[in-house]
Length: 298
Image (cartoon, rainbow, N blue to C red; front, top):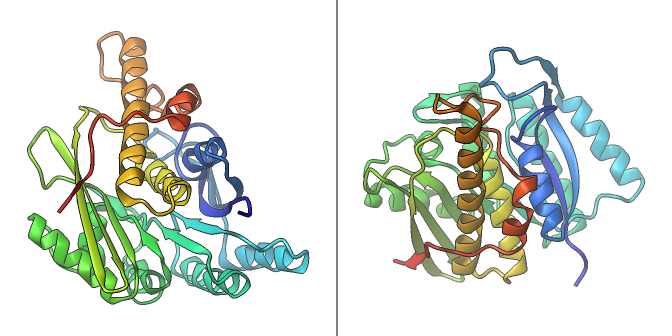
């Protein structure tokens, strides 16, 4: 099998871990070559007092892809996209998907539609119709959170039944694998991940109940999407194994991060800096996840 190579188009921070900084190291540890294009370059994530940086526009993205094509460097096994801040850039991503799939029709496109969380949008609403009508039909795997699922379907998701109905609208648009990375549809002390694969008319559905950690982390959705991409490839598209290993790694990283943050904060509320993901320190857990919670078929 040819070695897997991912083109990852996401945000980048100089300090900390979100976007490409969350995704690249775990993918490399799991054996993937990663070519990163940074949709934005920021000093740090927006949870700090000050954030400054640069934005890549659609012409810049097109120029990079043009040069890769001219050098015959545009053969990828996977495309991963995350934070995109403008409609024109998102439309250009649709062009990139088509161009890369023309070269490798079996390319897997994993779309993390980063638009908001906890009821708050942090991208322009004008991205929504592009995701709905253009991007979702091109994606092989999509990994929204509960709020993003509501945005993309235009309907509230208050129950499991609501969630499965919403997920089905993605399948109807042509997306084969839908993962709701986190939802508050379970008990107060847990998060629920929902997964659905539609293949050859057969629908496999699974849920995972995850103990909730009492803190707010950044970069977790980006890490989730990268890990799920990796494990689906490594497991030969075994959904249960991929979910178990993805969540085991995520839980290990978050527990290590929270413990270090609490040690540093001396009993106070940890700062944004103290809560940056401890990814490098978690290399062993990325390579050798040990699931403590397990996905269950529905």
